[in-house]
Image 1 (cartoon, rainbow, N blue to C red):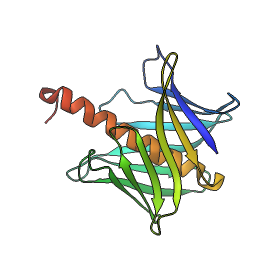
Image 2 (image 1 turned 180 degrees about the horizontal axis):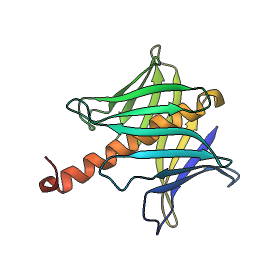
Image 3 (image 1 turned 45 degrees about the horizontal axis):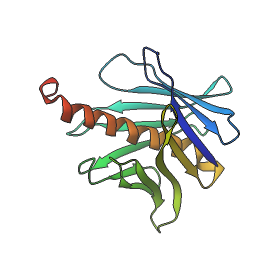
Length: 167
């Protein structure tokens, strides 16, 4: 399944839409929190299918991924720095690795099988984030993990550009 993300401009919060190659909207992804941490809803056909909550217990933020349909919760945690590009996903045998800063990374299982991949491309009005998910049964969890990694990348980029705003 190939989908791509586009950001909605002019909204008060971060809103993205995920489209198929046929330009059909598959998901809306909204960060509904005006707080300094993320609380994201992933909606498909007017029903919430996933939620991502940023947590701050420990030294580094991590993300709880709630798959509403499967009634499962997973934890995405960064190992090292964003530049090192390694995240674990507790509750699965998956991990994220690659060039997070350059938006060219993949979700891989413990034996090296690719679950999903992410890349960025230029469009006439900016950038689009291309996502390829191998098995449609993994779509919601893989999308949540990818969104959480993108949020972590964005937060770390903000901190490095404005270090006086962060502890």
